[in-house]
Amino acid sequence: MSGWRFCFGFVPTAMSAMHLLFVYGTLRRGFRHHGELRGARFLGSVRTQPTYALVDFGPYPGLVGGTRAIAGELYEVPGALMAALDAFEGDEYVRGNVVLEDGRIAEAYFVRPEYRHRARPLAADTWAGPD
Image 1 (tube, rainbow, N blue to C red):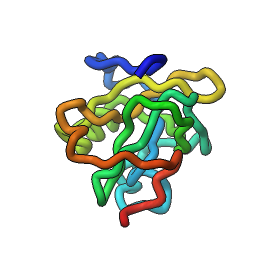
Image 2 (image 1 turned 90 degrees about the vertical axis):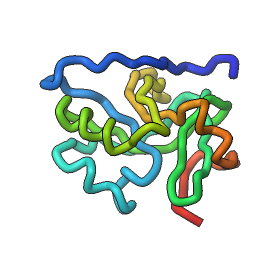
Image 3 (image 1 turned 180 degrees about the vertical axis):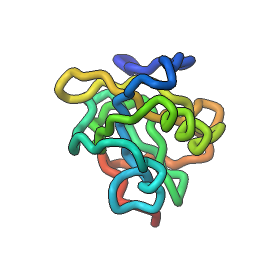
Image 4 (image 1 turned 30 degrees about the vertical axis):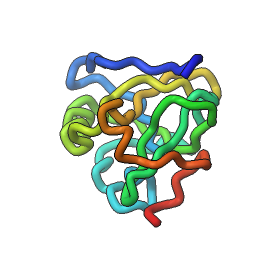
């Protein structure tokens, strides 16, 4: 996992602050949980730097450290919505920082290490949806 840019224990800023959120799975446009982002502003399609990987839980993916540039979407999200998304993502995920291809830092939901064994690695940089 050398070169893995990840921060456990992310401390959210004030509820009124705006956050940059990188999404790579069911929160993306056209996927079943995109409605959870209601109130966020879509900023565009982006990629991470090649220090991440996707894992597959079946109906949804997870983000971990690796060697791939992961494709996803970037959103500007109000602090109150981030708190709701934290609750929505549940115990399997923790919010941390990702470095985007252009050098910007965004937040993303990473699989907590204690849940990683439940997923299988994906040999792709984009999650296409459930099997």
